[in-house]
Length: 88
Image (cartoon, rainbow, N blue to C red):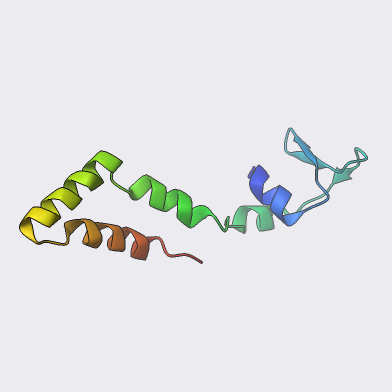
């Protein structure tokens, strides 16, 4: 179960144990499993971008060769990643 989604959709939830959610008084909070499954983190695009970016060393190498060759390889690479993973 997506704990991040439960906490986001149900602000009264302070603890999740064995896929059961509880409020501050220990009362179980019943949540909609379909809504939790459908929820998409507003930060998902950041995680996807981070996973797609070349390493810093590779990016620096691209920048160096772009400067030497008058190319835009680094800019094109970063732009493509941002377009594939747009901000919501």
